[in-house]
Length: 177
Length: 287
Image (cartoon, rainbow over all chains, first blue to last red; front, top):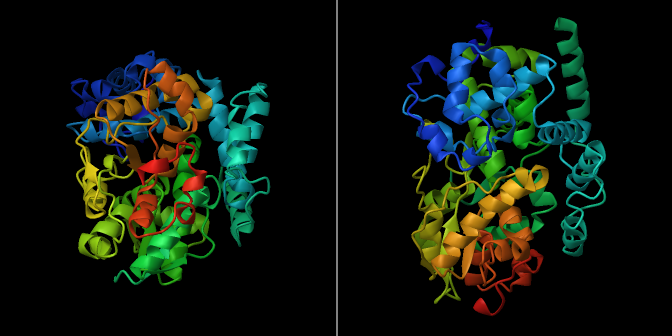
C-alpha cells in the first residue's frame, strides 16, 4: 500500500486523518449524484493511502470547485483543495485523467493565460473544441455571444512584463527539477 | 481607506464577455463619487483551471498580482469578479499561513511580496465602505414593485474563515443593497448554490441541471429577476435560458442583471447606459 500521497494533504488542506466520515461534504455537494465515488469516500481513500484508486476516480475531475464541502467540514478539511491536489497528482504520475474533456479544458485555459497573462475567451472555446475533436461543441453559443459583442476576436494585449517573467520562472523551474 | 479613490482589479471577463458589468460599475462609481484606478500590469488569476493542474503556478500568478499591488502602493484592492476575488484572497491567506512557502515563491518569482494589501470584494466595498445610506441617497428612480432574488454563487463568501465579510452560507449584503434601491428581496434556498462554473463548457448537462434548479426555485418564489455579482454566474444563468427553462418547466424568463446594473437603473441611468442591452434575458418593461 502506498502512503506517500498525503504529505501535502496533511499540511495545506487540513488533516484527512481527522475525517470521521460524517458525509456532510457529500450531502452538501451539488453534483455528488454525478460522481462515481462520493467526496467523503475520496477523503477516506486518500487517507488510507489508496493512491491509484483515488486518482482514477471521476470525482476529482467533476468537482466544480464550489467549496460547499470545504465550508461544511466540521474538522476544517479543505476537501476542494484536496480534489485539486489529487488532479495534479494524477497528471504528474502520468495517469490518463478519467475525465479527459475536463483536463483538456483546464490545460487549454492555462496555456492561453501563459501566452500573454490574460485569458482570451473566444480562443479558449475554439482551441478546446479542436483539442476535443468536437468542433461543434457549444457552437450554438458563439453566434449568440457574437451578436451581443461578448466575444472579442482580438486577444487581449500582452500584460507588460508578464511573458519575460514567466519565461524566466519556467527556466528556473526546469533547472531545479 | 475612503470610498473616494480606489484601486480596482478588473479581471479578464470584465474586459470581454462581461463588459456590461464593467460599464455599469463605472457608472455607479461615477454617481457615488468614487474615483477608481485599475491596478497596473495585472495578470489573470488563473480561475479554477490553473489551480486544477498546477497549484504552485496558481499561487505564483496571484502572488505576482499581490506583489505588484504592494509595489504600486495599493493598500486596498477592490475586486468585482467573485472568482478573481476568491483566488486573490485565498492565495494571500495561504501564503500568510505558510511563511516558508511565501519565502520560496518570492525567491522563485523574483518578487518581494510582504503579505500586505487588503483584497476587498465589491459587495463588501459597497455595503461597508460606501454604505447603504449613501447608496439610498442616490436613488432617484426607486425599483418599487420589483421582487428580486439575490444570487451570490459559491466564491463570494466561501473564502478562508478569517476573510469572510458576510454570512458564508446565507449572505445578506446584496439583499441590503437591493432593499436600499427600493426593491423587495425574497428569502430563498439557492443563494450560494453552485451554477457549475466551467462545467458550462465541459459538461453542459451537469451545469444545465444546476442552473435549472436555481432558476426553478427563484421562479417558484415568483421573483422578477435574479441579481448577481459574479461574471461566471451571470453567463451561466443567462446564456442558455430558453433551453433550460423548457427542461425545468419554467414559463417566465428570469433576467439576471448584475447588482451594479440594478443600482444604475435606480440611480436614474438608462438601461443602455448600464449595459442591459448585453443581457440575453432583459428586464424589459419591469423597470
